[in-house]
Amino acid sequence: MEKNTGCPFSNLSPNLGITCFVAFITVILVRVLYVIYRTGKPLNKRSPQQTLSTLIVLGSGGHTAEMINLLLVLQKDRFTPRFYIAAATDNMSLQKARVLENSWADSQSGVKRISAEFMQIYRSREVGQSYVTSVWTTLVATTHALWLMIKIRPQVVLCNGPGTCIPLCVIAFIFKVIGIRWSSIFYVESIARVKKLSLSGLLLYKLQIADQFFVQWPQLQRKYPRAHYVGCLM
Image 1 (cartoon, helix red, strand yellow):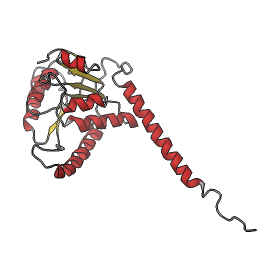
Image 2 (image 1 turned 180 degrees about the vertical axis):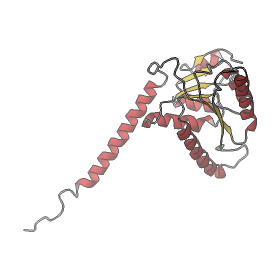
Image 3 (image 1 turned 135 degrees about the horizontal axis):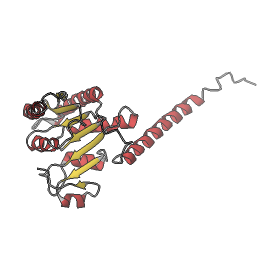
Image 4 (image 1 turned 90 degrees about the vertical axis):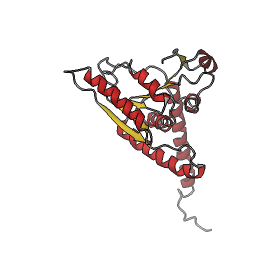
């Protein structure tokens, strides 16, 4: 009778690998569901004196004008330091943010200067760019967004519609899932969106990435019931 000299664990290796993979995917799915469940719910109460690092995503045209109006009512001493991000081809938005920060600093003579940083991010696709070349630029933009988010690790993300906010918000959501940082994402849909959401807003709403989703028209709130109607902010 022939003796079986093979390793008794040789047949277990493939099954063990599959089991570990399934267990890993299960843990990730459970974590994703937990993050979605917790999204929008109050976190542990923080001290009113505790500051919150805040990422502010700017966009060209009306997006920045609306964001500046939102920032005018911001509790500046609470939401600090502030990090402003705009597209690499959008210098005007960052200039407006610098003017705002300088006006705040000038009005607080003798008080500690509020810290703010201004950054730019690559666009995934420029207007008129071919879809073939946009594959590469999207990879570059995503890598750059990841590097910025690792550097900043904001506690609050504030955005209102520019496409540059999508990779930043998705990365912030992934950070929640893997436990790097729990960032509260606040999205305010543009006042120009009266009957339907922008593409950025629709993605964040459908994927349930935003913790709080605000619209400025009541018909939008009726169409998207998880959104909060706050009236016209302009």
